[in-house]
Image (tube, rainbow, N blue to C red; front, side):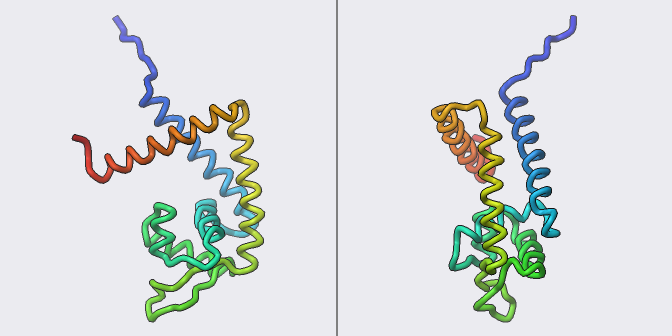
Length: 154
């Protein structure tokens, strides 16, 4: 007799997150295509937009939950496209303050508006209370999984 397959929470959670990230990456890639940048750079631009006085690569790495090598590559690409500038550089540039140029601020402002629209459309059909519960739940799950990833399971 064949066993009935039931889709459980793990499958729904894993598949939904994977699908959300895949679709988000496609959208971000399309939004940054006109600028010759990778979709993954949206997160750096928005983080820098929120920090008008600049961030170090280490700060950016931590805020965006990306490794330092990836941040370094992204900053270099953003620098070449004149979206960011490094100031207070040391001999290695590691402790430099990275901030958006005027061009970077203008483009990121426009991107933020597009991201808001994407999030709005993505949440269509949810009431305000459902949306609040969803984001609160998502934050709790994220924090719990972070602890498990750092400390392991009991």
